[in-house]
Length: 49
Image 1 (tube, rainbow, N blue to C red):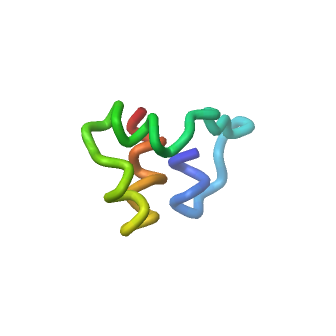
Image 2: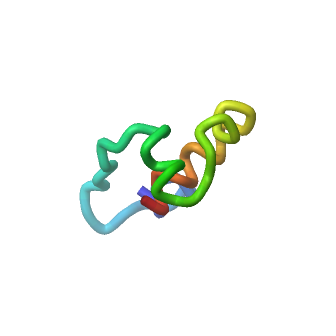
Image 3: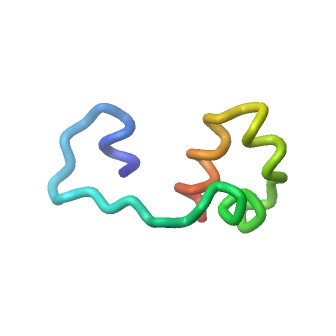
């Protein structure tokens, strides 16, 4: 997914984990409220988680 989101063509079918933003934020050390204020943080947390 990181390759696709950066605009490049992946060498295989991308996989996007089904983890909700609120849990991903907690797992990445952020608060869910921060992701509500800054939506790009939610995507970052999901990739980190």
